[in-house]
Image 1 (cartoon, one colour):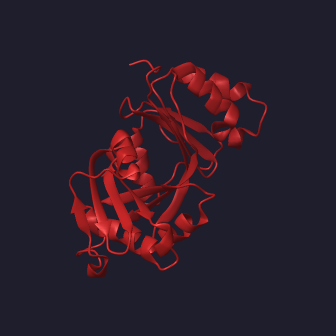
Image 2 (cartoon, rainbow, N blue to C red):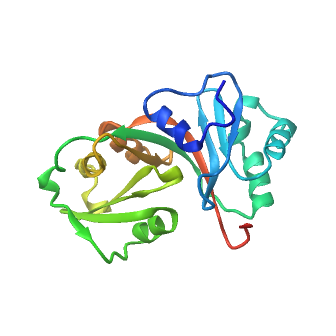
Length: 224
């Protein structure tokens, strides 16, 4: 059984290596790595809730839900209870994927150009939810964002303009992120399961599905 004292970072590092918590139907509760990020990661038949709330509240709330225990942590009722208690906000449940670093530079055909004062909406959003954000534009109408997210992990997101989609640019940008992180590191990416194009692009670039993730973001009403 996963140790309750394991840190979120250690659990993520292990999952990136393909070492997952046992599929025993249990829920592990660990502290948040930072005030900004609380949430749930559901692996196969094992969930991790990362929060600074009382673990007894987490477990009692999950036990009170009238649903399949394996689905409880990702249920709308649990998320609603969590948001009501903490004053946080959430967007959606994402597919969580990861890929290891690749040596060398990104494909030069992308003509990546780093932007030092970006105003792209995707970039503004990234700066609210990640640290050390860097942004590149690509020839043909693409944007690549890289930063440090949950528990300090490397995270990437991409944007491809509508008029240049279906040409492999998304896959190329997702692959480029693997060349922009340090040697031996892992880069993570979240995709909405309904965004099939994004899911296909990241998997084609070698990102492996790890689990599902719901993040609960600190807002003006959340305690510090």
